Length: 218
Image (cartoon, rainbow, N blue to C red; front, side, top):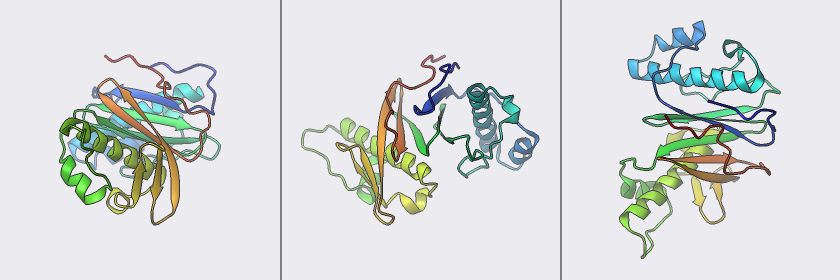
């Protein structure tokens, strides 16, 4: 992966990685944690942390193993004060990372993901199928909504089981609203090859859509 040199901290930096089994950058603590996980969880844990360390190492010009990040399983990643904010997500075949000087959340989904979108929409989302929508377009709209809300939950360091029903998605306004917390976020969605990517943020004035650090897919 390559990173934009002389980066502007006001523009989020995103790294996209295909899952390939890369596990060559890990601290002793991360290896100890991985040993306590199932094989599948350990593999994605080590690969995601390797990409985090490689990407931030390039960004800050620091040895990847010296990046002072805490990223325990199931917990939001934490960087020391003054080093900005990181969020990451993975699907079946890809990992996405975003860094910014301000708090930000990210989620990635395969556009062809097979899921019970009608059941999901009925249970959680305030949405109805438009008369001119095909089943495929309706499925896409539900997937986009799910992806954006997941990004918002990561921004808020929330829990999917608790917060999914609280978030409302306003596609035209590009906003998300948390009913219980009266929290309003903006979101951006990017279609990237076979994936849809959502970013959730409070106020990033210079956010643009073409900000993935590398678009090369191998």
